[in-house]
Image (cartoon, rainbow, N blue to C red; front, side, top):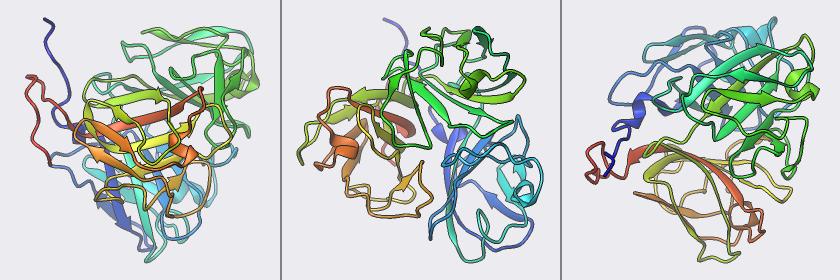
Length: 336
């Protein structure tokens, strides 16, 4: 029998940070985990009121921002380049910003990932050439989720997961259902070493710069998958192999928002009193899509189509762990 392997401490590779802005430079925030983590990608969202999402990664640098809920090109000059001062060994330092990720007395959430093949996360930058081709990655595993953004010009956030297969794609900044997109990934499945680009300008405009974020499923740490809802308050149980810390939902076959829930903002079951939407600037709100976070997955407890649609296309979910169901020795982990 193959040995059971997992990441015993997910906080080494993923963390959620809740904080309050102070509107000044050098507002240092330390992650709450038991061990230090230096993030390579941080996704920020203001909770108390409407404001854009902001995303930063260490490949492009702390002075270059992207807006996941919009088509904006990468900000390389102006005030947006001062919002994040640095990626730190145990968190991050905020810069001079009075509105977006560090406004005085406003509350925020930051979701942070460490780039590592161990944790199934890679960041890849490349320049488009409008010709179908492959791009190398360092996951050493087949990606289950790819999120790609054109940096040099405005464009949608193109994304696909194994749940919709690689002939289809949709957009993180929109509500559209997944649809046939032969020129996105050239109707070609990614491999453990490359992903394939088609000719569309969304992922391969000639001479433009792009960034791609890739995740693969890691037993006991991350799960990108799909389930079919039943449309009633006694919804399906979805096995992930861990207690989720973060879940993002999107019905694949319907027009609907991308909904994000986490256990730092929602500290008890049923979860989803406080939700955020990846495609909207709206702050924390009641998503009316209750579900229970369990030691080995989640149980849907509502009839909301956003996470319990019975459409045969299913519901895409992307989850990262708070605690594995079993540790690296295959022994059930203690609940936190």
